[in-house]
Length: 323
Ligand SMILES: C=CC1=C(C)c2cc3[nH]c(cc4nc(cc5[nH]c(cc1n2)c(C)c5CCC(=O)O)C(CCC(=O)O)=C4C)c(C)c3C=C
Ligand SMILES: [Fe+2]
Ligand SMILES: [Fe+2]
Image (cartoon, rainbow, N blue to C red; front, side, top):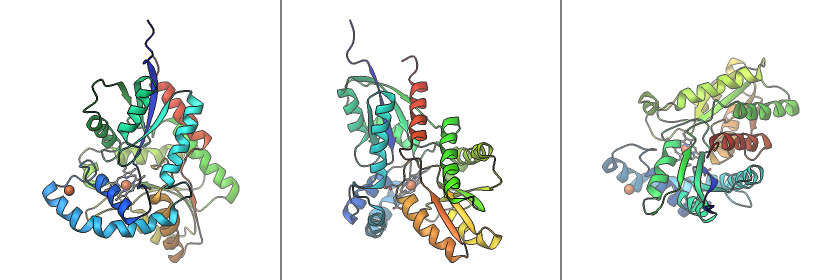
């Protein structure tokens, strides 16, 4: 007898974002995010007083103002692009696709329940993080286990750990760079700015840094251009050392080294968000020009571009084979 609950579905996972650009909504989001020990591993009796006493009250209103500068008519950029990615992948793959955010909504639990309601008992989890990190990819894995503790019958799961080395991902990045160069001309340098993590995490075995360096290396080989590429790390948080070189510090020195026209790409982000549209496209742009740079061009994330959706479709096809 045919089992009607025997379908494959896809859970597209990402970080999540506040519901609104207000101090209250940002505080709720940051509180869930920054309580995750995969993200901040400090012992709770040290971290919680700092988080509740200083970080949440001080950072939330400040960051809410930054979200207001990038907020779109339909909502937070990360959510707007994630919804477009879901719709496009559903259309192109012919499979049910749901979003599941590690923090905030739609949650991972909501996403899994929606797929089960559509008859899916086999779920491919695709965290939209090309480079693996304990702080992102592993946090998705933990959240699945934690959220489904009360579910009487679990679906079967497959999980994509990383995809930075996939030709289709490198191809999508390269095509976005080449299209940008065809329109605006070539720069003196292409900066690949990745979200940072504490250096200690990398020293203790998180492969994120080597995945980022591997991404740039593969992009260099694919572009095969006279434009030099450089890897940097952005979005530092807290006082300890993070992966270096830092994006902000690098931008201050590049013009003095003769790099006047700079293009920036952010390969660790699958969708534009606060960290790309505000930190890079606004703050970093300004500091590069102040340091003597002439042109600074931000190349958008892959978002719902056809090459990106093709890449996701390929990953889905390969990882659901024989299921
Ligand atoms: C506290 C430490 C943080 C680690 C470690 C970290 C890793 C990490 N994050 C992303 C992707 C995103 N981060 C985003 C926002 C964001 N990140 C942190 C902190 C850490 N991230 C904070 C506190 C915030 C919120 C904004 C702020 O207060 O500065 C986002 C954007 C979300 C949005 O709503 O637009 C993304 C995406 C990666 C890929 C990563 C490690 C590999
Ligand atoms: Fe707490
Ligand atoms: Fe982050």
